[in-house]
Length: 51
Length: 365
Image 1 (cartoon, rainbow over the protein chains, first blue to last red):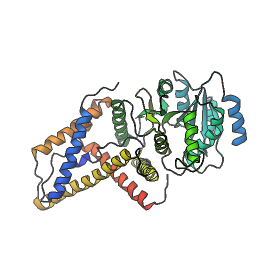
Image 2: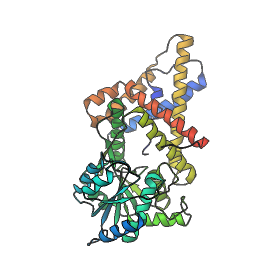
Image 3: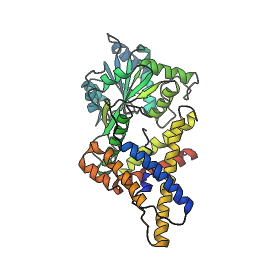
């Protein structure tokens, strides 16, 4: 119905670990997306006027 | 409804001085909430000049209670199209009585508006703004699942405030439109410039009529906003089952609306968000699978400092963005795992919505 946060999927980058399993391509895809989402998280944390 | 309702509206809908604000509240069996909704309208700093409750196939005391609370009650006739059909029936009678400068507040029967809602919305309904929506928070109730929704709504309100009222959707919870704009939409549908095919404001073939109307306004060149002063509260779903149904309808409706409009200058960013969400679902699945793989074949998960740092960012984001909900919720958000349940649930619903939309399976809502 409303704003769909781009953080759907962020859950996939938590728990303090991204396992290296030998699935290199998979690992890179997950890692890249996690970093992208982390950038979004930083943007949301940053102080900003709400006026 | 036509004759009696038309007479009712004609008698009272054109008070002087103009312009007027007419509140339009579609209601289907809302006896538990309708009085509070009307009371919040009467308690406005700038109250609507007319409150119309559109009782749609009600089998409870909604109409009786609304009338007692001072609203004009119009009952729908032969309406199989739920809320959108009910609104169309009333608007068909109402719009010819209004001048361009008049405005219509469409509001859910379970919404309770903050006192400054109407006055603020009236002031912002100009300069190419097609509709002024609200920023909602969730009311009490629903236990754990209710709490998760209240956190979600609090984050949404924070996002909207930080974006200076810029929103993707004018929600059905409460939105003020000018009569001129609504007439423009109906005309554009009749002319084939917008989907819908008939000269009505709402497209009755969709699951999410508010989202569709937002896309319609944007395609006609209007802007849409939700100022942070336009606050309201709305009910939360009280069980996972109800939440599943609600979100499946919202998410499938949004996907189908985009499919109807195709890829346009307006919808490009909406499609982009859909893609990011879809990709997020895939990544989550990959991540969980890789965790299982690690545990199964290596017997352990190696922890890397960089990912601990990334996790720290996510934890901080969860805490900061729910600050308006107080210390307890901030502490809960810090655990991540609690709210992750909700994220995974929403992802699963989104996946189902995509499948249902692609398969065009039967709708039930």
